[in-house]
Image: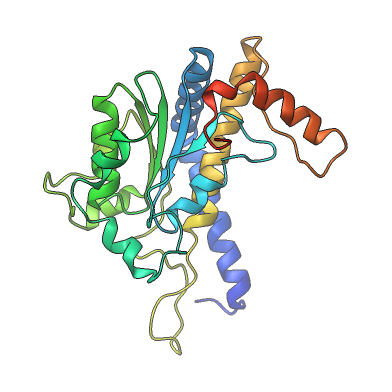
Length: 251
């Protein structure tokens, strides 16, 4: 490590990763945003899923000021976030075969919808089966993952495949295996993960692309505004009512 303090080193590492995804994933981000715009224009619904800490980026685009009102969270009990007790249960559930099928069978997902699946490693059974089964239903799948895991680790799914192998479009977060940007001689393990910062930025860049694409087509993007600005609640009420048949977080 350099002589800079750890805070500066971490921020530099995060900035470098953001620059990489900006430059190297530009075409994929454009394609993903276009897919979302196509789905909205075609009357489809939007969903996002992530397990564990990957759920943070999924939640960040649901019912979000400045975000698309049509983005719904596809929740798996015990897997979304780390509020389940014990927290380790979430990691165990990600490896359970068949869980994705049960979730999709009881979800509103249908042909013509789009699903964003966020999984840093993309190696566990849940995200792999989620992508496989969603596509079998006629759902378009956007995967947000680190392709490095597919190159440096083994799959935990019976097929031997990763999330990236079952997506219409893949956004590569460029996060190194282990998700830790810093090391110190005095600290026994690598530390300072950047995946949440980078993955959230990737997903927001995708939704921004979708909003602009809709506007270019003469369609007002179904965007939410902050409830903390004057007129925000009234604006959101109009949007939520207009698209109520495609919004599931109000029910």
